[in-house]
Length: 76
Image (cartoon, rainbow, N blue to C red; front, side, top):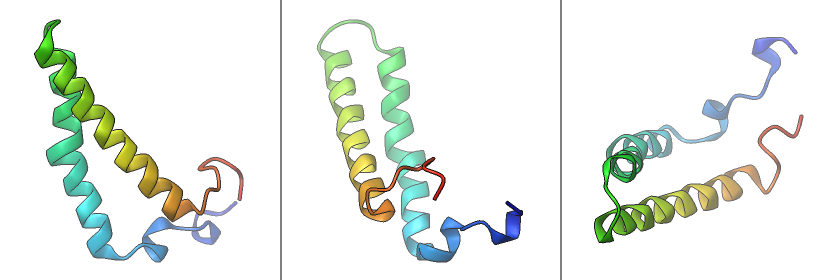
């Protein structure tokens, strides 16, 4: 499929929403993942894991809503 005839997410998602998700990844979710990797065993690590899990649930819910439950690599 030629690049220009493929569906582009930027054409269907408003720019402010894209900016929000980019900032969310950079400022919230990736730091949580880094904290999990850097933390030693114990309560702090469990708290970081829970924080990362909550962020992942939010991302999955947003993807389900945007994709209308179609698979990302479903060939649509």
